[in-house]
Length: 250
Image (cartoon, rainbow, N blue to C red; front, side, top):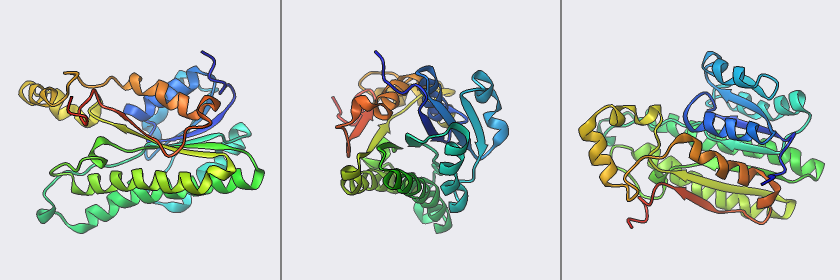
């Protein structure tokens, strides 16, 4: 299938590893050019080396609103256009809220909610001014659909991302701007290393997933490509759960 994204300019945050890297690879495989942003430029080196003409690595601190907003201009400067934004960067500090300083939750909200809002706003301003459509993909989590113990800040932030998606989709649909959410469950990434490397923990975790396995990072790529592509022009305000059936409790 031709997704029609050859030559597209896309920003992917949190692109250095895990789902962000997988989404970047999927977009590049379909011909898109990607500004791959992450806090550490060194962490992006290997990914950028896979397709140096298509992947432009960029260091960006998601807590710095000016750096986040500037990603839009960078993509246009480097690739001549901006067609989509994938807000994937996020942090998930764990712990009991009663024992946690609230500054941790504030930082979580800054990275997981405020940064996507800033980048989405910056992109939408360009699209509206140029009368061109665009696509925003916010990567949330199943923890934003059902709150999880020891992840109060993360759950709250990802729930906010889902509601932010719906609100912006309603505001911007008239301009041809689509805003959708992907809510992943457990995937085989560094974020799950402690579970994956502990046989007992892994067995217990898989019992909660009807598919009895974690997702492979490459399995999220095609969904992101579809939501970037013109094939999804009538899709907005949607939340796509990709979790092996865990939320549904099949």
